[in-house]
Image (cartoon, rainbow, N blue to C red; front, side, top):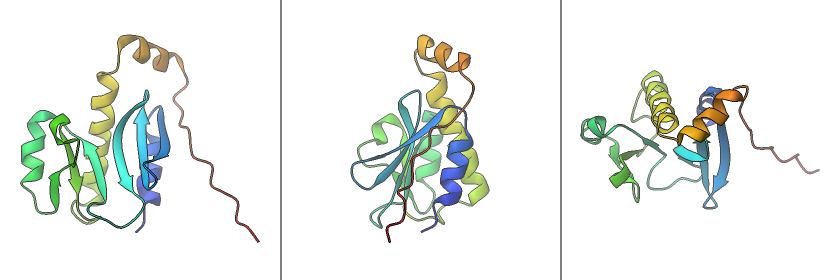
Length: 130
């Protein structure tokens, strides 16, 4: 599974941070709120992300895309495989997910983020042991 391109894309979006949560999930957040979650271990699905209410039904009708476990009520979808969507289209969906979360942050948080230089916070990769 190649998630390097996914990490690079998400971290290129303004104010994105990443964090490993739930032992095997890499979570991408903006303003402390998550917009995408990728599984680091093979399992039931590969990636989940937020989408607009109007797009949720359209997406889950497509093969390989299901309502995200635990998050479907908040209009999250899950891709069962890396190939469920073409990469270019997936990048667009991730930009939209980021934008949805950003615009729904409290005004104070939005203001604080807008005063900061758009940056990303990356995980530190452990140094290889000899």
